[in-house]
Each structure stands twice: as C-alpha cells, then as structure tokens.
Amino acid sequence: MGQPVRDYLLTLCVTAAVTYLLTGPVRKFAIAIGAMPAIRARDVHREPTPRLGGIAMFGGLCAGLIVADHLFNLNGVFELSNEPRALLSGAALIWLIGVLDDKFELDALIKLGGQMIAAAVMVIQGLTILWLPIPGVGTVALTQWQGTLLTVALVVITINAVNFVDGLDGLASGMVCIAS
Image (cartoon, rainbow, N blue to C red):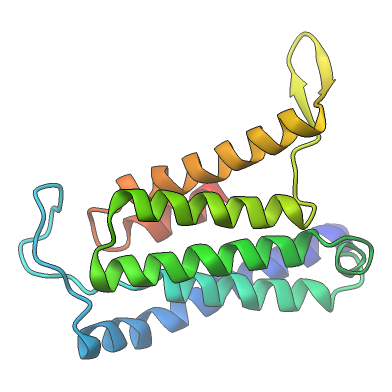
C-alpha cells in the first residue's frame, strides 16, 4: 500500500473516529436543550429522538481536514487551492442551517434558500465542477455558467437527499459515510 493511500485511510479513520466519539456528547447536548421534536409520520422510532447529529458529522469533517492539511501527500491541496476552505465554509453554513432546523423546524423555503446560499459561497470561493466524464464520449468541459449551475444543483440535491432519508436515528450519518 503506497503512502498516498495510507494518508487517505488515515484521514478517513480520523474523520470517522471523531464523528463517532462526538455522537454521544452531542446526543446528551441535544437532550439537554430539548432538540427532540415530536414523532413525525415518516419516523420509524416510537419515542422522540435527539437531533443535532450534524454537529458530530461537522466535527469529524473539520478533524479530517486538519489531519489532511498536515499530511505530506495531501497538504498541497491546502496550499495550492482554496477548495478546502470553500468546502468548509459551505459546510459550516449547511451545519448552521441544520442545527437551526433540528431545534426550531425551519420552513422548507428558508432551508432551500440557505442551502443555495451555502452552495453559492462554495462556488464563489472556487469550488466548481469544471468537467464531466461521459462514458462513450470522454471528458466534456463545462462553461463557467454550466459548472456553477451544476455545482449548486448537485450540492442542494445531495443535501436534500440526505435530509429526506433522515427518519431513523443514525441513518443519515451511515448513508453519508457509505457514500463518501
């Protein structure tokens, strides 16, 4: 196994471990502040379940980025690109919206607006899809407008896909872990 693969695995393990270790304290915090909405029709559980799991996932993301920044094979991305900062600032906005939604149940349009702003922040800071690999065709370069539109759409769709399946305690974090 080469050094770059070990660096990726170390980053993955630190991210997963920090997320796991933060889950218990975040659960206790959610119970303490009353972030336990009533049971919804789409929920599988029968008693109120603490929310705010996004705090643990965001903490894991931050830990993973810190580790990656200090690894020889990965820190070049942090030195040569603004993309990690763009990802972190967009994720921080999404995290804030998620925490507010878990505590106060925000209106769907407010959440959508916040998600679009977070995606726009990422694009403004340089995190944009520049090309697509199309089977049978090859690599297709996108115009700046197409890349911006596709990036915002992909971010918003992904956020909502995770949000829609989040009816069972731990399901969102498990799905995101598998997807990543």
